[in-house]
Length: 362
Image (tube, rainbow, N blue to C red; front, side, top):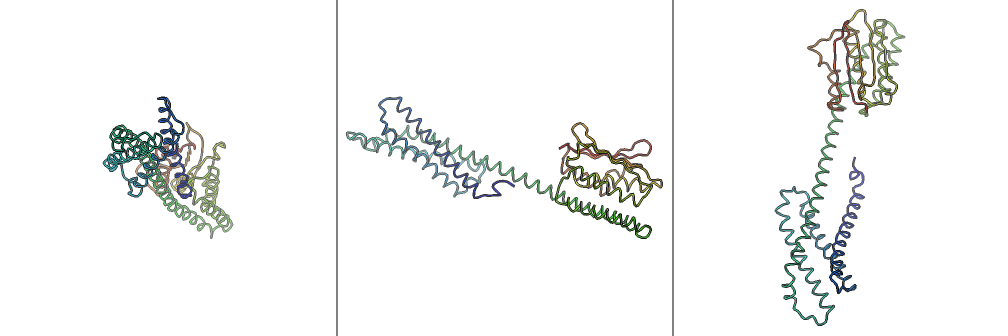
């Protein structure tokens, strides 16, 4: 959430303060430059120079602020550059002429007030200074108006890019949450079937299975609103899941979890390793009468976190990318990490299937 969204009133006040500071500093610098030139030309009068300085600042700010108020009311700040182009040119000419008129009145008034013998009529004074004041006004207004619109155009582009990025993030979070909501029922449905099979045959194991399932449920609900969780929490969940499945398969299931301790605080997608473990049970252990070993290893590799899950089985090449679990996980990895993450299945010698997930080491 941006600062504008948190407190728009305060942000608006800050923007207004910045605008007036820029106005005052910019026109004060321009007026000071003209006074320095007048001083270098000789015959400089400090009192008259001070009056010129103050009135030049007032005229510059007055005209440009009137222009700003006009474009805000007319909605010009929401226009693109092509729409602005044919409006800016006449605006520069009109504000330049307004500057010329104001400066002519100012200069003539100061001249009359400072020199009692000055008797030139205003029309003659205007004809004499018209071209130079008009050129100066158009040049100044062109600089100010172009800078003003380019600044607001840049702000508009930044705001648009930020909003687009925010919308993409919201869409990504929504899709991730949707995928997670699909995965949780799938996971718990399988766990309930495990308990169901034990209720009649071994009530003690069924009670232990219910305890494990309740812990898994609690953990899953706790993770529900988090896109990423620590690796240590994910491996604890996997350990509970495999213990639950071992109650069901007994000696047919052995498992080993080996995790690099330095990676314990790294974050990854919830139920990512668990999905691989569940796939190993469903397509490996469950299909082999003699069962086998589910070996889980988490390690560093070339700036990535490598998760390897191996189980007995034969890989069905035609069904490699299918299934809710692995398909869901691939979608979540792509949404969270883009092309920085991958999930591959390989057939190893000795009827061993290896699932390898690579994610950035963040």
